[in-house]
Length: 220
Image (tube, rainbow, N blue to C red; front, side):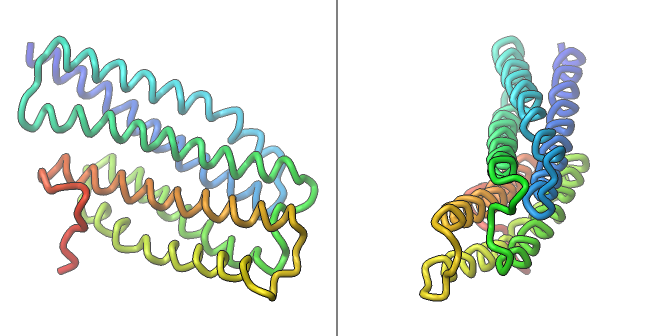
């Protein structure tokens, strides 16, 4: 029975790794669509979101079957429940990347954001591209050092988001109403991608150590 259980866990872990790579790619392509008016990249993100959703459903089904058939306890139970949470988190990240891509497609061939804000959005995208790669590496090795780095660095993305929001709400704003809506929504989508990455990182810390994922790991 243990062999069967381990095989089931391995299949789930492989699917979760696949899902993380798909989310990383979706984030990168959504950024290409946003910053470079790349219609093909936007459409790829939109089309591929269904496969991310399918992976999430498959992982959830596999986890439920493991819970029902194997009755896991202790560490095994923690791994399965956390894997379900991770699948949900990655599915939401795929949705957020799709929302960004849809915004870029909707305004094509024009940018959805004013030109003077493109550098700030580019910084947010650069941060998310790095974070997406870290998520993949973190999951592959269950690396808590990478997880803690993701958690600590999230303030950088929050600061960029705040900068955009403050400008959008200031007398200096010169864009159109449509651009204002796009700026607020896209910046929020990107900030939420960072939040979900933090959630995933905390979940990996919990899998490895049993540390409460709602708390910030030590900065020592």
